[in-house]
Length: 186
Ligand code: 5GP
Image 1 (cartoon, protein in one colour):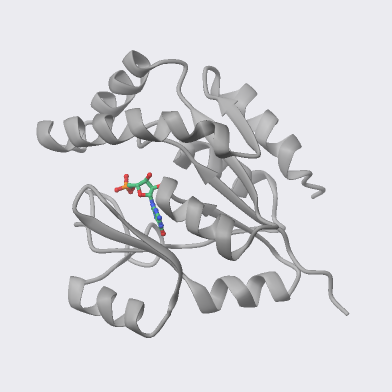
Image 2 (image 1 turned 90 degrees about the horizontal axis):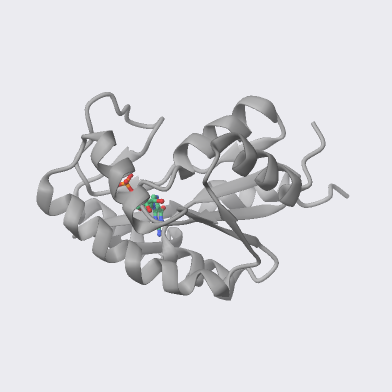
């Protein structure tokens, strides 16, 4: 019998550096697979369909919800985001380690449906630094930046719910800490 793959969830406020850390994990470990989420938000410049997200119309997203096709889904800043269920289950059953990079509500759903998942909260050193990073990314409108900062304040309160909290002060150190927590071999 194949051993099941581990499911690891990385959560943390928008702009905290989840994407950068996840990319580093994928570059260094070939036994980890990142789930590609579906979203109804518009692609940012440079984002590729099927690589960064599956960009869907709201109608299509809702059809998938109705068919119970998401492992979890949530709304974030007026858009839907969800993790495709079938492929994630297939990967885990094949013994592949699966990584989800999702927001707080989704992480909470996974905690209920998949209690064995290991949940990591990536936190910024402080809110001023988070704002600087979101603004530095220069991909959002002022309204979207304000929305994301308001959501971040709430998300930070929830960090104590997590198996581990990693502070992203130094990206290299945060990456190594997460690598250790995931107990990766390859
Ligand atoms: P962004 O619009 O910046 O790509 O993502 C916004 C937020 O949605 C981020 O916190 C990101 O981690 C989260 N997110 C991305 N995919 C999913 C998903 O499949 N489910 C949930 N619940 N959140 C997601």
